Each structure stands twice: as C-alpha cells, then as structure tokens.
Image 1 (tube, rainbow, N blue to C red):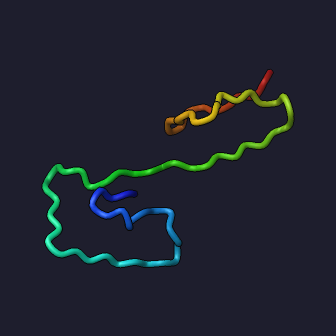
Image 2 (image 1 turned 180 degrees about the vertical axis):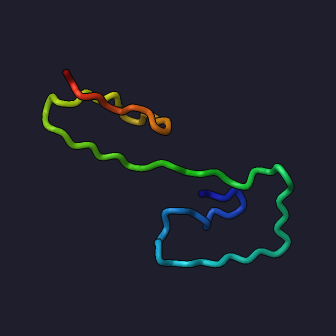
Image 3 (image 1 turned 90 degrees about the vertical axis):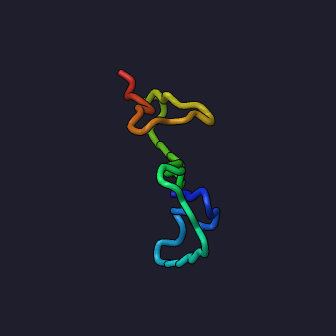
Length: 73
C-alpha cells in the first residue's frame, strides 16, 4: 500500500518493524484518494530447455491471474 499524503509509508518494509506516524491537521475528504496498492513483484521461472512456451517480454504488465506460460505439446 502506498499513501498519497506520505511517501514514507510503504508496504514490503521490514516485517518485524513497527513505525507510528502522527499528523496534525490531516484532513481527508470522503471519496478523496487515500492511496493505492502496489502489487509489483519479481517473477523467476525455471524450466528445462524447450519444455515451456513463455508469453512474456521485457516490461510487460501482467494482470492478476494472467497466464504467463504453457507446456509445449
């Protein structure tokens, strides 16, 4: 999660670390954008040569649950 009002707040930080942020006069209106989820990850796929056909290329944006490969017949 990334918040619009504070770049210091981010997910995927150290898991055993708790940080508390306090704000004075922070106002967020109903319906105003608070932030967004950042689901980007690195994907590593290993296989034997010529067994899998990949549907990937550099900088391709993937949708959730999108197929990235298929086993060659």
